[in-house]
Image 1 (cartoon, rainbow, N blue to C red):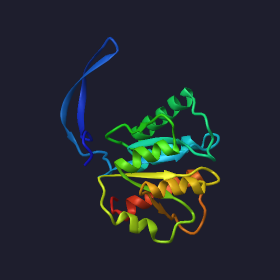
Image 2 (cartoon, helix red, strand yellow; image 1 turned 90 degrees about the vertical axis):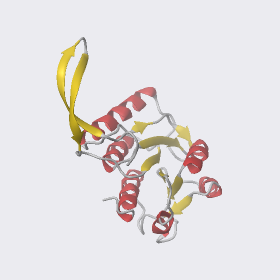
Image 3 (cartoon, rainbow, N blue to C red; image 1 turned 45 degrees about the horizontal axis):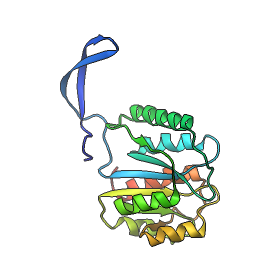
Length: 199
């Protein structure tokens, strides 16, 4: 269980000056978290597709979402967008009865994401050119934390894939069809949860 993911039943004892006092009644079994911390590194897509990605991966249990700037992704993540994405994450967490609030981080470049997440976790990079069965083989190894990277519309460049391999990342397949970037994020997290028997 992820640290800090306990849930408690409580009643509101008083409300005053925009503050509430609650009384804890009992520990609750409602809601929950995946047994392993999962970060989703999503190349920033065009339009409002990131809204969908954040909502769905939060529902599926992602603990962290990182907007990533790749060669073929849409650059420029404004402060307004970041606020909206964090509000979407909060709403999705509440709807899904998550015990923690997943964090939407500041956008970072692909190289910065590799440097950080390939050293702190097992990094899986979804790519249509990966071999069949590569996802299951990668997940056969145990790791304390897991990061899932999804490329932009137009996919990762060869240089980006080479950089990922150099850091020790696993390039994994999501099947024989090419998925849209917003579909791939949801499919990869769902496949990981199923293969690890988290559900």
